[in-house]
Image (tube, rainbow, N blue to C red; front, side, top):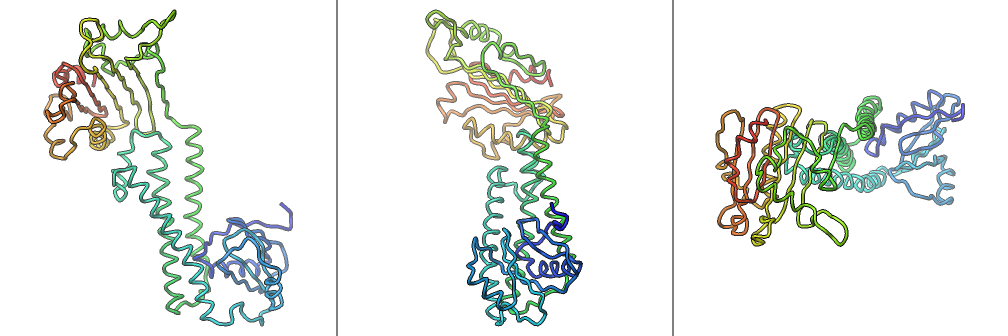
Amino acid sequence: MSDKIKQKICYFDLADIYQEQNWLEDMARRGLLLTYTGYLIYDFAYGEPTERRYRILPEKRKKIEQEELDIYESCGWTCVRGTHASTVFYTDDQNVSEPFTDAVTEKKYYVKRLLYTFITTIALTFCILMNLDLNTNGFVFNPIEAYYQLADKPSPIIYIYAVMYPMLVLFELVFIFRYTRLIWKLKRETFKRTAGFKARRYVNMILINAIIVLMVGLFIYVIFVPDKRVMTSSFKEALAYNDAELVRFSEFDPSAWDEVRANMIVRDGNKNIDNPDITYETSYDRNVMMTKMSSEDLSAPSRTDKRDKSGGNLMYHVQLYKAKSAKIAACFMPSNIENQLEGMNFDVSKKRIRDMRFKYDGLDYAAYIRASEKDEFAYELGTQMLFLRKGNKYVVIAYSGPIDLKSKVGLFAAKM
């Protein structure tokens, strides 16, 4: 940067046109003369303090015809080039008439130009709110619930939805209020150019810097993210996975496990491969709210030996959530239960969710559900689900097979 140029951050937007004009005039009185307008950074040249007048038109065109510039200059106004969303003119002659000699025309012009930005801001805010609503099951206006609902998501996602999006919504709502107020006053012809700018600049400075800090924080957080996700890619890795807190299928149903394991590897020509009819996976993950999320997934033919090839699949899925606190686990559980039930195609009416709960000594919460006879296929498979919580641990079990899943509560409770 040249010694003769000083860069300043412009904390004003199109709704602050008159405050920005006053700020630029104040800079000129301090000997800083505007030479270039960027999207956020303005360049000022050092010069003699002067009473320079600035006028801003709320429109930025890629190119202004020289003929138009000549007309402005012939009237005493010089254009400052730049990339900002407005066009800045200045004059050092205090006797030069305004660019708009007709006040009514000026107000109509400003209203027309500002209205476009106003509508764009509303549309952007609406999109942010809709995105929040779709991803947090309607908890847009209950940020605490939304925060806990996102507990199992990767840390950057939690950061974006719980911090960044609410901040952006606040930012946009402030802009909408300002645009509404300015356009209304211009249309009512009650607006008088304010003499101040400092209060508006400080408020904008706080909002913009907060957004910048949050974005930088997100970038740093992504780099040093505490998440650790490990997923298996082979039966060998899944079998080698160790987790003393997770009830493995080998503990849940040892006899069926022996059959499954014996059939995991099959011959394909001259080599052994993982049986394509069996899916067996384990995973481990953690994020900023959950110190541990581990799971085991098994899907196999219900009869893996040669005696009976009929019947559906044997399915076992257990997911352990270990939260940083019991409160996080308790608040996260309700929304997770609904999502899990929907994923298994269960009827998720509020009444049915209440009815599936039962008491079990030593557990803070226990609920059981089995596929109804209406769903013949799931009922025949014996599809069941179990939800258990104790302190900061929350366990979800989904199972299809001959065993009564509820009879196994003690097995899972013992590890909680």
